Image 1: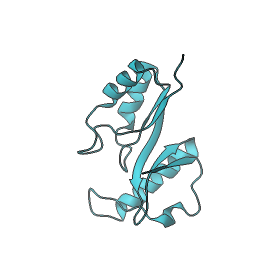
Image 2: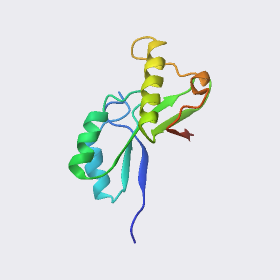
Image 3: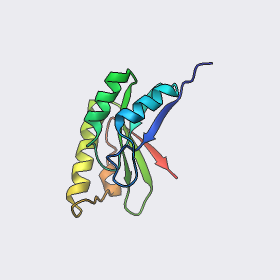
Image 4: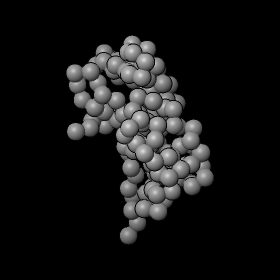
Length: 126
């Protein structure tokens, strides 16, 4: 039986004090487990995406770009990029959220999703 599993929420060592493994370690482990793809979704950052892309290329396992965010007075979500417009929307959202908060913090507001950004898929986290 072939697994069709893709991990859609994975933190790397670019999520300070939450993720411990490097992108290379995560991709190598995902290949061993037979995953079909791996989403790197560090908290309100894309800082580890270049290393994730390199690990994806070296292992042959597709990378899904994304980010985890806590919406102020709301849920925690994972945003996954579907296309170029989604990547641009995620970069803009991260920039706005980081600029409106103190250094090392971020503030994502519900208004940031009105209208809904094109090219992003949101997963609601418990």
